Amino acid sequence: MSDDRHLDQAIGGFFDIWQLLSAPRADNESAIRARARPVYLGGHSAIARVLGRYRMFVDTRDLSISVHLLTEGYWEMWVTEAMLAVIKPGMTVLDIGANLGYFTLLMADLVGPDGRVLAFEPNPEMAGCLRQSLAVNGFGNARLHELALGEAPGRLMLAFDTGMPGGGHLDGAPPPAAPAPAAPPPPAPQPATMAFATSLPPPLPPEPLPPPAELPLLAPASGWLAGLAARLGFAPRAEIEAARAAAAAAIARSNADAATLAERRIHLAVTEAALAAEAATGARIAAAEAAAAARAAADAAARSYDGLDAAIAARIAAAATPEGALRREVAVRRLDSFADALDADVIKMDVEGFEPAVWRGMDALLARGRALIIFMEFTIVRLADPHGFLDFIAGHGFSLGLVSPQDGVIPVTREALFAAPHDIDHMLVLRREGAPT
Image (cartoon, rainbow, N blue to C red; front, side, top):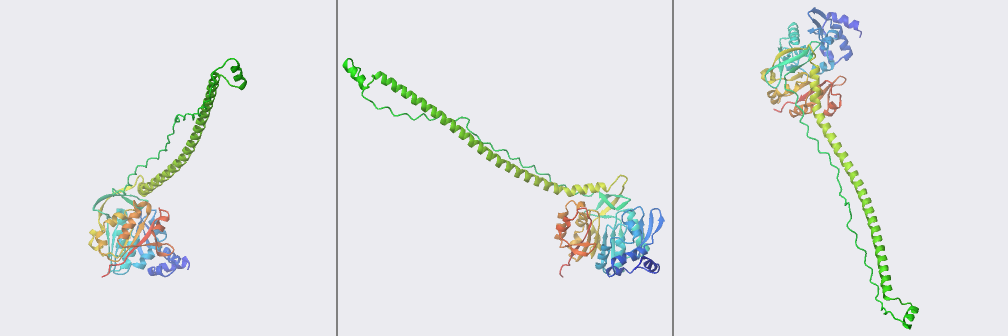
């Protein structure tokens, strides 16, 4: 169906909201777009028809949602369809972080005159637009509370940029949990040392030679006896003793030389063995040092990861408050201090990272054990402890789902959420069945 035909139809009637659950999305968006017909009112204010049904006041300085409402007439169609499927007449529905009130208007229409809507928006400029929109559409079943929700009552500073008013954040809010102080790194393993003897024990004395056999020596003879002795090869005692002494000295010198050579060879062998042992020990030490360094790096990375979310959240908060940003002091109350909020059937929550504080302020509502569906924006980088927050939610009996732009509401795992880029805004669907009666 062409846009021209949609435009012809738009002149005569409102868009049938229930077509969102049956007709193709492209056709629905085209029909809604044709009915938008924005009108500038002056003073940064304009009015447009959203979803082909509701007259809605917007701030023309807003470069986020207002631009889409003025030119398209709808916002996040996949979330719009998901809410249309679960909100029924007579329900109590909460819009926490109502912004300009796009979802507030839809909720007020869906719950009908027997239902009620509680909208919470601390930004005075956006709350002013929403108040006008509720009045011009005649939704007396919706009540706007111009304040923030948190863990404890008080007052905080809301900082926001007029160009992106929906991205404001609360100054003075409990800061993200600081990462635990880093444990001192384990001492680096010191290279083991091996003590080697610088000198060897004195060499063993050479084994003594057996004493020569005592030979009978003849006394020097004279005359024919001396001549006979010479002819038979006998030597005088003195010569024999001198020869024996020379032989013993030669043997001693030989033993000393052998001992010295043995000592040198032993020392060389010990040195080589020591060097080999030292090299092996060095290799083991190097391996141990590498393992210790890897463990230290892993520990440091874990500590850095633990503090990463808080650091990123702080940077985002700083970036969300550029110079010239507006600041307004706003009141803060606990959600469970509103008696008519305790019967909530459906909650939409989008408070730019302040969601954990809102949950900590709704103990009485959670304790009732009623069936409850919560549409909640979940952006990992805006949360100091996203894993802990999901543990807290699961501890109250909520299952985890996701509004997919292509597939509608689908189950999702925590691993899938954290595998996606951490700066993506997910719209979670948290569902709890009622306690058995």
